[in-house]
Length: 123
Image 1: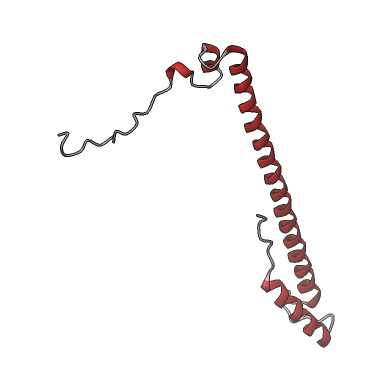
Image 2: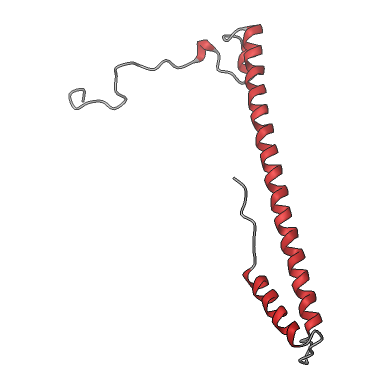
């Protein structure tokens, strides 16, 4: 599932406000650094950073999908490698155990029909 991209309501509101202020005076200066050109510059910087963030999320999603695909390939090959060792040396061999398998003669056999918890009559 792809990560949700970010949209800024503050940015959208600022763009609408800048359009209104621009209709008053494109070079409006309210003092203390509050100018229409400075406001527009900050809006563009926010837009650029939001786009960069959303692009990074897309790249991260792509890397994640590639990693999962490689992980599936690795799991499949690891299983095939173990089966290859079993074919060459047998499932009861020391080599099979060295490759990560449980040799046939060392597997636990479950007791059928018996409950692991003793009943009241057995106590």
